[in-house]
Length: 288
Image (tube, rainbow, N blue to C red):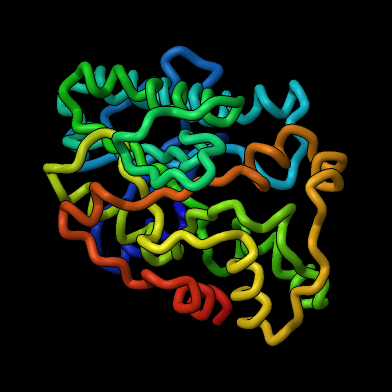
């Protein structure tokens, strides 16, 4: 969802884009194979690129975290990031910047604490995964490439992501808060994710972790009410915490019930202005 939106934005600016794909490639694409060493034999098309943007990652929500799925989550994040960072570091003319996805899950379950980029990592599988994900870009840092790790909140956009999983239930009038509903949700509109990613490319002062979350996080209960109101539906059926744990196991505690009150301190300090700073505005844009 995000890669497609970013490519569209770049192509609209008439910026040439080369997309790395698995399997066969078409014009504008370059095939790579993570099982091979190196993953790309002929790296000449990558030479002298301005920037690389890496967003890979198997979905966190909506799945039980079985041992096999945990491995898939790790490989799709840590393995791909390390492979790409190593590949770029070996170029004769590497890109100036590598922008890599990460997540607010880095902070774990933090209750009422306000979290900026200087906040420590939390505990749990997701926090540990985000730590390893961000550290996997080290080969690029060591090669002198500016690396920015975008810690995404819940992305609200049309056609995919978290909202696509919520909409069928809420449109039936069956939506409701998760657990107590008091946990903080850090969210961001897809429009602002695209803008923030390109802002990171274009802003030399940005490096390291950057929270990509709107400046006004909300409690889950408030998010639920706002989404139901945007759909002109009631939100009367809460999902008890015990039921979520039965359905999703550890994923429920770390991705659905965890509280993360993150703010975009580094983005705002660098001059970034959000198109959708308020939840009602972001939902309206996502539901068009």
